[in-house]
Image (tube, rainbow, N blue to C red; front, side, top):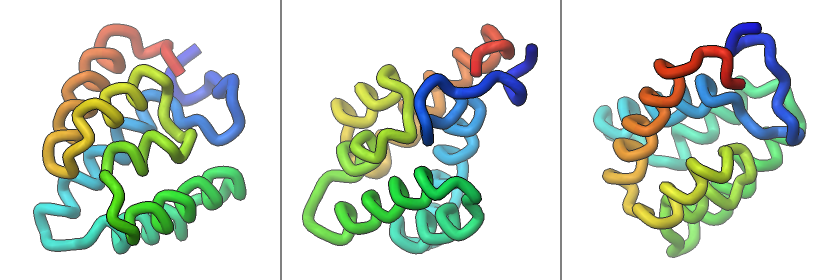
Length: 115
C-alpha cells in the first residue's frame, strides 16, 4: 500500500504526507504575509471532513488569543504524537514549521508506505 491509501487509525489524524503538505503550506504562506488565521481558514474551507474542520476551528480560536503557535497546532489532534511533540517543544511560529518539515521529509522519504 502506498501513503495515499492507508487509513489513519484515529479520526481526523492526518497522514504524514498530509502533515508535510500542511506545514509547507503554512511556511510558504507566512512568507507572503498571510496570517495564521487566514492560512488555516483556507485549509479549513478546502477540508471535507467535519472532524478536521472542527479541529481547524479550534486552532483558529486558540491562535486568535495570546497562545503559542506550536501548542495551538498540537492541540488540534490532526498531527501524529511525534509531530505534536515537536510543535509543543519548538513552539515558535517561525521555527516550528521548519522543524516539522525537516522531520516529516525524513519520515516520508524513508518509508512511503507510512500513512
